[in-house]
Image (cartoon, rainbow, N blue to C red):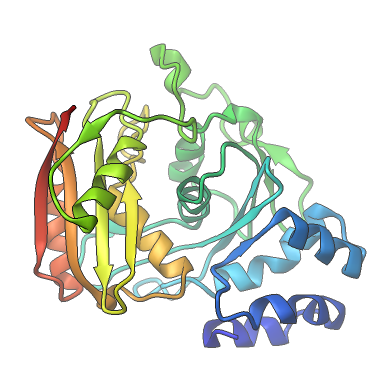
Length: 296
């Protein structure tokens, strides 16, 4: 079991510990529970889905990188597929606070990068802030997505974000988590091509500044992230942060990043390069290649 989970695991009810142990002891555990695993946990613990997700929140929160606030927040994004995806807040010493990741953003992005098509519930251990409520409003679930909190009745995003402003108000028809392929290509090696694939699935309906990042770690693994734009602009999520979410959920560390590629549209309205470069440099990674996307 990964060391970060030990304290949270030991505080769980014994029946849940027994059910979870084989999953957490798997060296390949990447903070995702498949639909079958969720069903098995429910059967073994006799918990309904909402109760089980709430009980698992301490494990999600254990994934937090709260180096500034020292305040761990965990979230679980529950997909219509039945799969559950952990998320946690991430903070980076030496970078502006704008580069931080909220737990809800983490869980949602984790699900998106894993190929989930839609979310039905976000379970989180603290009330979502306004930033996260607006971020969730970009989803193809809309304001119908359920929000589950400890010791509160389950509500929907509509309850937390009344009179919401979102993509539908701007006549956008493709929402975050919809499947897309923008059809870009770029010349380069495996790392470049991974960044291109990520950019092709990015969500930038307002600026059309599609972008993707690919990170090469010290272990030889490649981790990718995509840009996720928002109707209110400020909750937009950079491709680097998306990749960092996946790296963290896989049990990796930002100090493992050795090389990165950023794939962007030529003459894009918005560029991710300067912010990506500055953030990577704080992690000790000075090798960032920028490549230009073009249509075949």
